Amino acid sequence: MTSSSKDPRRRSQRPGVKTAAHPQHPLVKRGDGSALTKRLSRIEGQVRGIGKMIAEDRYCIDILTQVSAVQSALDALALQLLEQHLHGCVQHAVKSGDGERAIEEALGVIRKFAR
View (cartoon, one colour):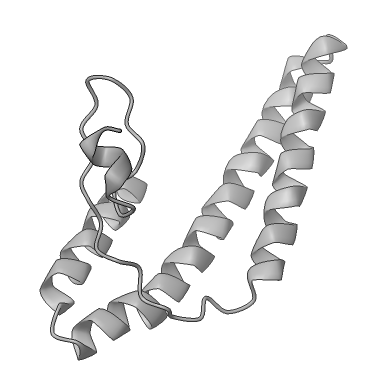
């Protein structure tokens, strides 16, 4: 067993790719998880539809329009998750004295979306 598999906070790694260990995720209610799951299922269906469109050699602009719709749907899902993270996990971290780390982590993710 490798050291990363012993620590449940570490994510699985690809060879040569370093990932940071994350602190234990607090038991903060994430809101309506079923709504997130339903939203993600719709996105999965859209992606499968794009695959079918490509297999059927559909008009490029129609495919690109669907790709744009999937990107928008993923952005909306990400914003919903970020909002829940800020109101739940980050708020919990601030109250428990670990706010600086949680805020820096959240800012890092926000910067990725700003690219």
